[in-house]
Image 1 (spheres, rainbow, N blue to C red):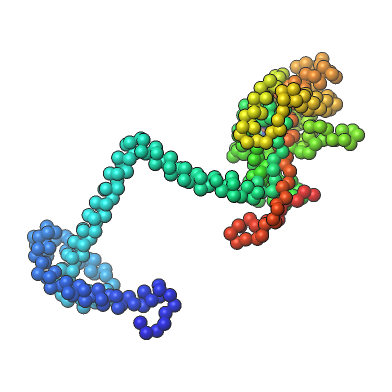
Image 2 (image 1 turned 180 degrees about the vertical axis):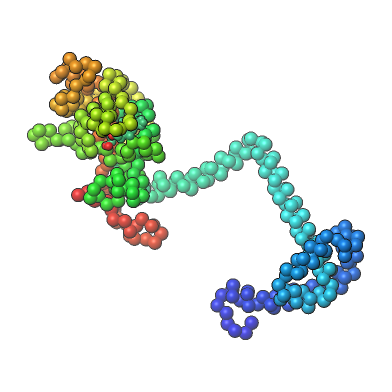
Length: 387
Ligand code: HEC
C-alpha cells in the first residue's frame, strides 16, 4: 500500500483486495486440477447428476444472493467453472466440520469419562475451587486488611450480648430482619444515621459476627443501626455495660410482650416466653471459647469473670426496666427488687442487651490516607465522620 495507514486494522481492510487477488491466483492454480477432478468430486459428494442435485439448487440460490462484487471476483477467478467452485467449497466445509466434530467428540468422551469417575472428578473440582478460592480469599485476608474493614471495627459483644445474639438466631428474628444497610442510596437514606456520610454497613462492622446476620429478608426494618453508645446514669456517669440506642429498653420490653402496643399495626409476633425463660449463662464459657477459636479477639475470661459481667449488665438493664415501670401481665404481683431479679435472669434482657449493641464499632484511622485512584471506584468517597 502506498499511503500511510493508522493502525493494523485499517491496513488489513485496505489490503483486502490485494489479499483477494492472491487468493484468486492460488485458486486459479488449483483450478485445473479441480476441473479434472470434478467428476471425482461429484462422486464423492454422492451427486450422480450434478445439474439435478438439490445441493446445486441451493448453491444457485446462494449465488443469486451473493453481492455483485464477490460474484465478479468469483467469475474472474473461476471463469465459468462455478460448479467446481461450489463443490470445492462444500467439500472444504464438510472437511472442516468433520475435523471440528472429531476434536469435540474426543473432548466430550474425556469429559464424560471424568464425570463418571468420582475420584478424579472430585480431585479436579477441589483443585479448581482451591485456586479460585485462594485467589479471592488470601488477598482479602492478608493484603488489604486495613482497607477491607472500611475504617470501622466492630465492638466485641459482652457475654450477655453474645447470649442475646444466640437467642436472636434461635428465635428466627433474622427471617424478618436484616442487619446490613446496602450501599444503595435509598438504603442509606432510610437506615443510615443523619449527619454521617455514607452510613451503609461497612465490612468491619460485622467482622466478628459468626455467623453474620446480614440477611436479605426485610419483613421488619433493618436493625444494623438499632444499637447505641453506653448509657449515662442520673449523675452523668457511664454505665459499665448498658447501652441505649434508637429505642429505650422499656420500648423493646413492651414490644416483645406485644408489638402492637408500642407499634400499632405491626405484624411482628409477640415473644412473651422471652420474659419467662432464663438465659443459659452456664453455656457461655464454651460459646466464648468457640468465638475465640473462630478468630474473635475475646480477652481471656474466667468462668467467674463471665458470670460477674453477665450479672452486672443484666442488673443494669433490669433496673432501667423497673425504673420505667414495666410490669409482667402474667405476674403483676412481682414488683421492685423481686421484679428486677426476675427480669435480670430472663432471656428478654439478653436480647435487649444484644439489640442495644447492634452496629457499634470504633473508627480505625488509616496509616496512609487513601489516594484517589482510577482503579478504585470508591476512592472519591469521603471517610465517614460522626457529628
Ligand atoms: C414475622 C416477622 C418478624 C419477626 C419473626 C420478628 N420481627 Fe421484629 N419487626 C417486624 C416488623 C414488621 C417490625 C416493624 C413494626 C414494629 O415496630 O413492630 C419489627 C420491628 C422490630 C424492632 C423495632 C425496630 C425499630 O427500631 O423500628 C425490633 C427491635 C425488632 N423488630 C426485633 C425483633 C427481634 C429481636 C425478633 C426476634 C425475637 C423479631 N424482631 C422478630 C417483624 C418481625
